[in-house]
Length: 147
Ligand SMILES: C[S@@+](CC[C@H](N)C(=O)[O-])C[C@H]1O[C@@H](n2cnc3c(N)ncnc32)[C@H](O)[C@@H]1O
Image (tube, rainbow, N blue to C red; front, side):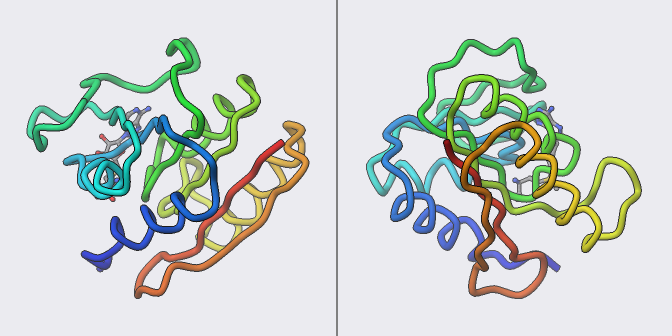
């Protein structure tokens, strides 16, 4: 069961660790991370395919590599099938990324998926690839990278 505080914890992590006024929140679901980051002074666009969401800047579509770059960081909380594209997009635009992975897109176990994503980010040229942990139950490991 995912922790309901996860958006608050992740927003504070992003805000403290990165100089990033503009945030792309990918696979953002209802837009709760958007709300938390906005409270902390960021300008956030959430991408997701859902119809139902909070009244936040929301691009109701699949996030792809073709999206024009108007962000200083790309992030995703439990982004499932969008995890890989977040890292690829950040690498392409030489932006930092931060994800809290959950389910893999290729049937790997959580442990394998975390290792795979870290190695994948390194292979895409990020100079720093590291992990941290949110103070919550459930899938709480953060993978982040920057140039
Ligand atoms: C497990 S939910 C997490 C939602 C939210 N971040 C949360 O923590 O509650 C995964 C979300 O990823 C979205 N998603 C998957 N691939 C996507 C993509 N390429 N672009 C945008 N959203 C995507 C799904 O629509 C779904 O809302």
